[in-house]
Image (cartoon, rainbow, N blue to C red; front, side):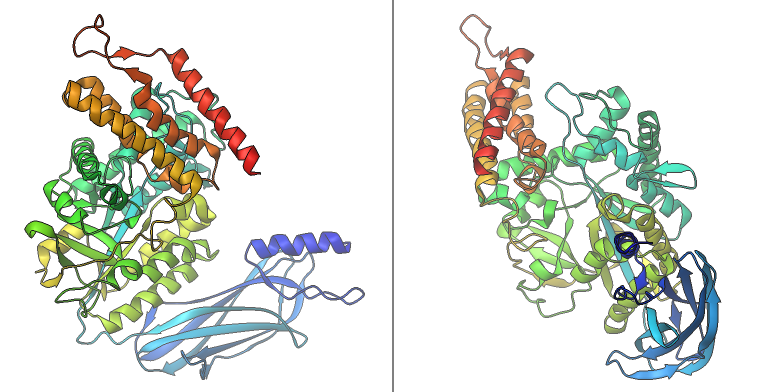
Length: 588
């Protein structure tokens, strides 16, 4: 194999998660390329007993790996060695194959998290290393920790003004994200199947109303603008998966294994609407979202997912007015700066947050680090048992500090799989569910059940403005993003005048407001300017939709609107598109 080919192979293996030594200089034999993982026979150990470790070594070379030695050691959190396990000496692993080596030893350790490290050498040279947490836990006299897992499932509106889909993600993420055992699955359906496979696990889902609407549109009358890019799975498969997905979530909600939250219909960054003086838009979007969620999913949603976890205190009375009783916010960006009688107490409990005019809601604060690791670290580990071990180790730390508490984990539901390692991510999540189910010191619950079973006594009267990312700069305050907001502002001013003139009950007025609410969705600014230009255009297209209708002339009939033909719509969209392209070229 020549040098460039060898370098290419090693780069590929690195991306696949292999552990290996750097390439040797020219003329010197290169080190073997191997992949290693370490697992234990259980996720949590008592204070004393027998520790069994399995070291898995995959030889990625085309010749047998000989003279392999493996040393396994246990370290504490200060990196002090606390024990060693029997060494493996002079082993071999066949070409392109995997060998498991088991070692065990008696132990007696204190209640803490440790790390097991296995180092592999060949002829004295280190060729690989792997590690896994070792959790030693004393559960005597400690109340179980409750896990409140909240997954946010969302897609923005991909429909154009003619009712055609222009992006395939609603369908693909339902039935076509990855293949497993000869069948294609989407992230949305996979979540249903995991819970069916682990009936003792309870989870809360936000099924964004704009996603529910597009599931329904897909099943009722699917139309796509162009050729549907179905990838590995066919469109018919994806549509069947949507049907199974919707039915699955309904069934899980009906039997109490899942709770369904609602959200402002088109996923606006709610705090910005309030700060812009558009609180009535937020109220309308929450009410629209709740009505659609309740009707389509046959539930009564009392909790709300706050899009982008964007929050400002002015939202509290609006949420209460819309019938919302609780939500989820962020530890790092909300809880840390919170004020009130219980601001110094443990985060691992629900809080009553008091707002203006006697309003209040209940807030759960997610553990930021564990949630983010679940979203983007533990979802990409090739060995699912290692992913589950990492998760359990992190949760055990919370249990030691807050037995009987509530650990809230909140994150996107589809992205860690669909935009993660796909099948690997799906199997990692499934293993994590299995690990949770195996621990008697852990229980899972939905948000509504936690509130029903506990007296919420902790109180706050202030939570700082912020989002999951800190502030709001990902959505406003940059030229291209602000161009979308300016278009929304202009169209909204037009709508306010039209509504005052023709009345809010007019069906066409309602249609125009609905277009504006679509334009208020957070995804358009989020994807601007770094994302595909389509997202910017979608926001501008719906913001401009108010100008696609004109007030009635004196001969058009009182209270009616003149519909502008699709030809005019296309012309307007084309004009905007050309202007946008010209602007982009100028910027480049």
